[in-house]
Amino acid sequence: MSGPPRVRSMNVAVADPETRPVLVPACNKVRPVDGRKPVKKSAPEMEKKPVVHSNPQCVSVPPAILKRQEHHQAMLKNLSMNASCSSDASSTDSSTHSSGASSSGKVARRVSVALRKKQSGPKMEKVNSDNAGALDVADSSDSLEGKKRCTWVTPNTEPCYVAFHDEEWGVPVHDDRKLFELLSFSGALAELTWPTILSKRQLFREVFLDFDPSAVSRMNEKKTVAPGSPANSLLSELRLRSIIENARQMCKVIEEFGSFDTFIWNFVNHKPIVSQFRYPRQVPVKSPKAEVISKDLVRRGFRSVGPTVIYTFIQVAGLTNDHLISCFRFKECTSNAEAMGKESSLNSKVKEKANEEQTEVGLLLAVNKLSFTS
Image (cartoon, rainbow, N blue to C red; front, side, top):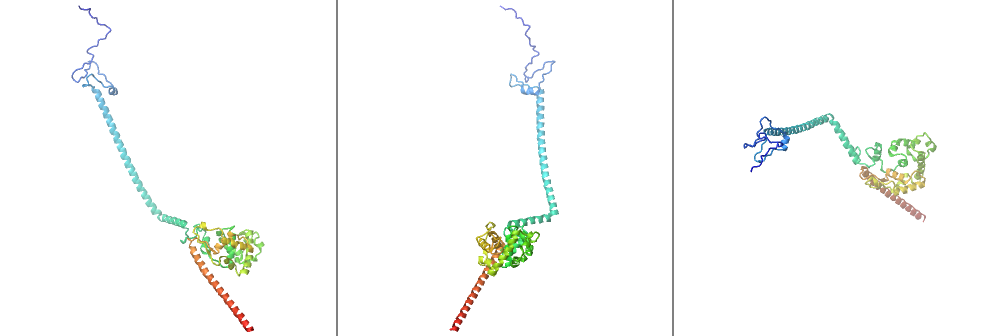
């Protein structure tokens, strides 16, 4: 028994078979509907959502998409090729530019140095030689003549002081006038320096009558220390009065010992003391010998003759050889000291023989007198 006939609902949309895509055996390409254009999608959407069909073996891609993909890949390839070529070109250009600049810079430098040498070659050599000589002098304390001196003589030392070191300092002195002069200069060091004293040495000799003890002892102190006098421009009133008083006391010593030389050299047995100092820090300011001499002079009435002043005096007068052993004057003063020692020993022997002969003659005379009277 057949049922009632089925009535189609008008609300259900029936798909038109002609509008649906139909899969055909030839590569499953979609047959476009007549009168309609194929739907075009952008390349990114197609890349993100590729068309996948039920059959995995056959996938259909529109030719437009394929062309766009090929065009896109070709553009990327061209861009990469251009970038690589530009980077290579820039690297080669920079390398060639840097190498060319460096080579050109080197050549320019060489040319400038050569020109400078031609223009100022002798002057530069002279300056370099002068600097080398100055360094040698500063390092070894050498003089202009190449002689090595004590360290207190530097390249900047005044010539008068250098000459004083080379000719007088440490040389044994036996003249009373010279000894009085050096004793006065040693006391004046409390107010002046050696270069200043040496530069005014001639004025000192004129004021103090060539340092004759007997003449200086008779000088008028009031006129000497009066304002405006030449002596007043040299030293203070205290030092001037001490020099005059020391001249008077020296005259007394000369009367007692025959000479100031004999008196002062008796403290070192008429032979200079050789210190043999290696470094300047070893040189003392005073010594026990200087203290003994200072006490004796103070007892005799001398002024401004402390241990420091006396040690300076015995240094400059040659009673002690305080030249450093590296100084060229050390050997010279030592040889002078040895010669003086031999001479003093000979003189003492001669004096002893003379005394013995006198005693023998006296004894013979006494014996003759006794025999004659008897």
